[in-house]
Image (cartoon, rainbow over all chains, first blue to last red; front, top):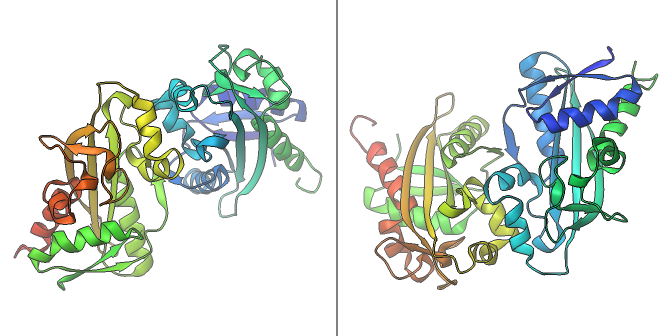
Length: 189
Length: 189
């Protein structure tokens, strides 16, 4: 097994974070803009596993896929696995609008990282970060819903943190570090 | 080709409408609760085509699948192909909340009916009905977003119409009649 992994994503923000998170493990990240079709599923884990299996089969190479979502408690988990679509349509402003001045702003980000070798079953690694939706957007770092998410115990949104700061506590950081621990363990080599 | 079609749906409202719409063509409708996995796609046509092909392959029988969505102009088409998920999470109240008192309430319902024989490519028939989002929900008929959709030139929501009235002008009615015309044409038999 090589020390480089192929990350199927068209999201430059995700790629940047993956490189920051995996570098300490000696894992370099190549990327390919070929995540392929996504299924409509009620969890990021199912979406990532399905996409990784399809991409590995199509590319004939081991591949890493990540799917993430923001789930707002008082909105029954919305937008969840459809976060990318919701961001493109109603956007951050839509989430703020839906919550209004409500004090029920609890939310979490979840990340599912799936790694799949051709003809094998995908392995999925998950990460969650609990927090809340900010009253208004703040910060220009990160991507997606980062400007309105504040992790528990913090005051700044993910959009106000550096990539390094965010990755230390983010859902994606947790999931990718679990993957890295498995990928670099002697038993896996 | 028989005069009965197998409709893969778990939605009793859809099944009821399909029976009303297809009866005048001499087509009877059987149903099976096995739509299978849906892909995340930006159109109901892609979702329906993919689902029909997968279901036909799995069942070894010709199958009909329908996917529908409400698209609100001022929300960039949201909720579109994710209407079912959005209904389960933020619901009708969420759409009303997002539009607030805005006068920009233009919207359309679209329906894609896909028919697929095993080992063949799916045929897709489409229907659209233009209209607007009501200021508040009205009516208990239909399902989904029917209580907040008013077709162009009408005053009642789809939720206030009978199945027969709604089917005469609905997106689903148009799509299913296109399918029926093709299915019963001498060239198809």
